Length: 270
Image (tube, rainbow, N blue to C red):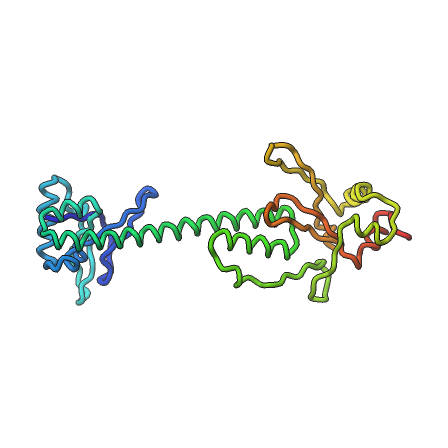
């Protein structure tokens, strides 16, 4: 006696089915595959399955499946889960049982690998969605986005070498095609001898719409404040992030445009 389970159309060259019901994946073995593994005729295997299901007092039709034979004709097979297959094998010889057991082990390993791929795929999609949201809200520089994508790839066992090796960080209106050098505000104030602290300069940048003050919670659930370059400010600077903890930004300003920016907020020589 032998057993199988589930419904659906199966191509002629496919005997194994992976069935998802209520988010639970189950591997099914068809009567044709059991016949192939054991060396029994398919009609005899089907007969054994029907007899077993009747003894179990279950609906035979719920295990029935239709496939197309070599002449493209519809034929009946039965799909069994592991439990019903084991029940069926109790009536078979030891060598036959061992062959089916080994085949089941192969199927379960394949299913495990398949589920891991699906799990990893879901994880990657989730991380990319978070990155997309972060990018829209905080507008990190292109180089920072590339670092984040590399980190996502590495976290999920993917090869990041297919990502571009170089990202251009430049102002939206730049036409040079290459990255524009930037520095921190403190360094630029010092380079140009501007009479201001970085804190006071940031306040002026915020007042004129080039910066905004944002907040986040740290691991202790305490509020942490940080500066972020606005859309208006992107003409003069960019947002840097740490790919290990990209929850806040650090503004950097384009070296060649800093004096123009200082003039716009009243801290230049003009």
